[in-house]
Image: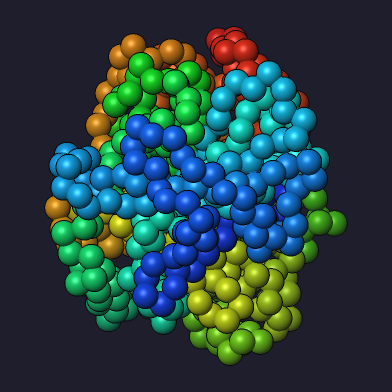
Length: 522
């Protein structure tokens, strides 16, 4: 299971990308830990407050999807930001990589639309490329791409922006394959030892840099990006963890906001334990919706009518005699659990999960590994991107209230009773930050005083950022307006005509969705 804390379950797939059949692969860094600049070194990084120097980079979409979108141009640049915004004149910097995607039919340009896909750890550059392929493939509507430059960026520590890379491929495999609910003390201590080893290795490699990967530091970077692209005010679309980054930016720079769309809300007011429990509840609810779907769609769900029983039985059998995959890995209960998590991010993943579990019963584990590897961003050669390294670095820098090992062991038992499939693993998933070295830098929690209306979008069946967070975030900011999609999966825009019309009207014309607007399912 994922051994990463609070927001790891919101890391990989924004619904808009999954609709197009894409995940969010973050390029693995070079062996020395430094990723190549997105521009290939053609232009120097912009200093905060100065304009970016853009250079054509068609190789980015070519490498991701084999081509660029028709009618779109792709340019890349970077901005040099202080490593520590509390000491901006230290001379030490990170380079934040960006891509600018512009339609050749652009007219009446409004400015730039900054994109963050969440995670933390997801690549905004990759996401922007996927979104450039248009609404027919799950991307952005033409109405938006004709009025905005689409600007994706990899936050500090992610992808192409001085990526954090400190977890070995072997430890990643061990983490995902491990028993998701270790019952015996020996099993539990194996998880403790793994988390200590990972945290210790990251501490040795990055030392005093670790707190500098916090959300608050990254929020300051967003304003440097705003200046580098030449916008007087920020227009921003943030998914999942991107809502936390956007909310932090709103508190720090309320007078620099033109429009913010926060889709798949994180609740910043929740402490670490409460946030993890909320996710356990959200995934349990989403899984229950999946099992109900199985009962009513027997032709599409070969593990019905008792899908929960089929999944739990598969995990139990895997502990005794796991099925071997083509690459030599065995489909342990941990890998099966990761596959379940992966499938719940989109309603389209439900049928894929049902088939994968059914195939597993016949000795074929390929479907399980397809789902799990999509979530883990594991490549065919057994290597991983830095998605989970960055996820840990950001979440643990943000967290100053991680529970003790003893408390986690107690919560594992308590949550197992309340959330049978997801409770215990989500309790265990808090452990990395228990051992994480370095100082902490929690993000601010409060009103965005002076900010214009901010649209906060919630999906009623969202597993990773439960719907209840939506109103909480909107209320905390003080200027938030809730927009609801009565659908399944993680995040909403641009899933339905109703959501698209409401969000596009806000982004383009600054028309705030009417109070209490609820959009029906697809």
